[in-house]
Each structure stands twice: as structure tokens, then as C-alpha cells.
Image 1: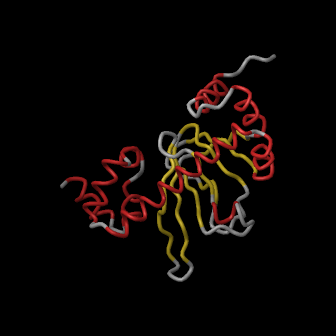
Image 2: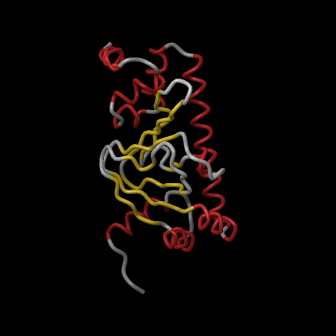
Length: 196
């Protein structure tokens, strides 16, 4: 049996936090493609057919969605290694259609990419991984729903307060222009909120 590299050990340690057995971790790593993404690079572009789901080992991304009626992109979510590290373009992953979302690295990142066909097979064969996937999807849906409720029903200063209190990794790691875009305000207004 070959010894693991430092990178493999780090990846294995990330999954141990999710109560996966060593065998299940090995199964995941067998189908994972390790991808390095440069800061400010697009992992997925609007119009791609994205049949991958991703797990962030290091780094972070913003999701920006394109609304065809307004011809405008808007930040819709954040994914960081220590804040919702499981990401994908759900509109494309499940339907096989072109995505309306782009995933942009906000720092140099290392991710694991899982192709849908291989990942689906593993979910069917491995109960441990099915539970892990269900947990991650539940967290993503809960997070997105909570963020949307806050965005729809709150004043801008209250949205910022919520991000500080409940989503601090976003405030600490994501460039202000994306947070401002997410909140629906200018970068200048965001800067005033931060100072005020």
C-alpha cells in the first residue's frame, strides 16, 4: 500500500470531520478529481452544462447568477472551505441543461470535483456517502433559504448585521464588491456600512 502525500492526508482529514468511515473516504477519493483554481478564475461559466459537484478543500468561491431579462449578473451565494464547502450549479447538475450560474474563485483554491454519473453510482452503493450527501444538501438548502428570507425581509443594515453574526467567514474572506452585490447595494454604501 502506497503512503499518502501531504495533500492526500489533508483531503482525508477534511472528510473525517463529516463522520465518514476510512473506507467511504477512500471510495470518494477514488472518483474525485483534484483541481487547483487560480484566484479570480471561473470554474463554471454561464451557459456551461455542469455535471460536476464540488467540495472545497482550500479557498473559496462566489456564485453569480445571470438573469436574462435584466442582462445582469448578481451574487447569489458564497462557498468557503470553512463555510458550506459543498457546491455546484444545481440548475444544470440535475437537468443537464445550461447553467445560469457562474462559480468564481475568490482566492487560490483546491477543490475535489465529482462527476454526476460516478457520484450517483457511489450514492447508490454506499450508505455512509448517501448520508454525507444528504447532510450537505440539507445544509445548502437551509442556508440558501435563510439567506433569501433575510434578503427579502430586512433593511440593508440588518442584512449586514446578520452576515457578521451568522456568516462571519463571508465577511472575513469575500471581497466587498461581491457582498455589496449580494445585498443589492453599491460598493460605496457597503464600505460605509462597514465603517459605521
